[in-house]
Length: 235
Image 1 (cartoon, rainbow, N blue to C red):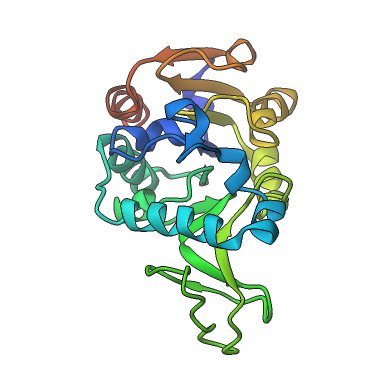
Image 2 (cartoon, rainbow, N blue to C red; image 1 turned 180 degrees about the vertical axis):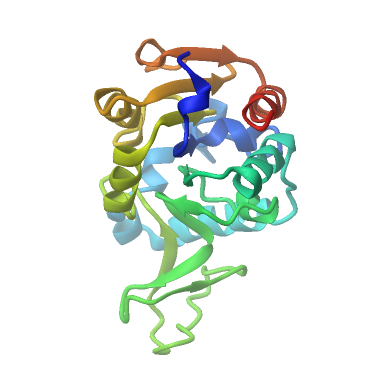
């Protein structure tokens, strides 16, 4: 990689690989099936319209499961970097868990939504939600029984893309951690960063589909490679 002394602004993208070591299974694990349903069949607006009970049960289980998981050394290392880094830093995550926040990160943008939020499609309010949605609880604001998981499904636009691209335009370094490089638009961030003149670094368990676009790839478990990299940045 280039001269690290010139790095001021950092954009970090995290994916399922950073949470896998905390026991949160990746989206497509077990062959992409959930109780004999393709994962795509429980993660689209069409699925929700067709069989809302199936979709709500799937997300209720996942919402419950993440709440007893704990951040790992990779999450804590990124929180430490955020706390000590003198320039701008934005942590963009594709993950819908809250492990970044629980490790102390504050500058976090959830481009795919959050398990621990519910979205009322009647009044368009998003609110903290830790319990089930299967029994159609009323919205705490408008009382309508039209809550859905505040998660971006296939076919829906990720959140806050304008903010992400604005941060990429200012970034001196783009780092991708634990992502497959297969899901757009996030998979295109590295190309945006390169075209804008930023340094790019991949930290991943194995080479991703977009590895060839990074200036450097470091392979290994996130709980090892991320703290090591953060240590270098804070020397």
